[in-house]
Length: 278
Image (cartoon, rainbow, N blue to C red; front, side, top):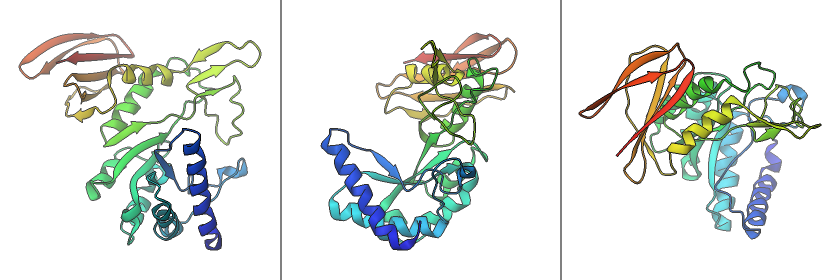
């Protein structure tokens, strides 16, 4: 993005948001650009944003444009991989960026999930969101790797992330209309010839979480020293509590203690289970 076009691009956002709102679709948040640090191997339209360009655009163009137009839509930064945590910190410490930006959007393809906590520790009032991650439709375990995704989601949610957004909803059996550069699939696959629908392991994992963890839930602490056992706990707004356990190992029996109550839990190989209590 060249600086001479930044004002025009900011006004494009304003028109986009007003247009959607007019049609009854208010937009909660936007990011400056999907995957600001890649050219997508030339396979799809992309726009690389140097760190200082994104920070300047938010503080000098986009934020002020929203302010003038009275737009309340939130602005999130980065919208790219965990390995850009240093860039996130650099942008957040730039003067006036925090006046307009309220969150960081992360993708899970490269880097360590713990970097979200590193950014949170430096800026605890800045929200963290996971905005992209998808299964490989060529993976032979595409349909049954729910434990892989259960482990991934547990780690994401344990590192101060407020939401999970998958990439994407539905593609066909050869990953179209995505044009690459990676063979990412959707939550579901619709066969272009038979119209049959099949579901990914990611679909079953996110369905498992969303069945029990309700909007407005807050994560609470949970601890374990068992290898291959991933877990994350929540308190829903009604006071009910939820513990999601992902067992990536063999069948086993574990003891779960909540307050002064304990129970034994039989876990099948490669399974996800949820405990709920009031």
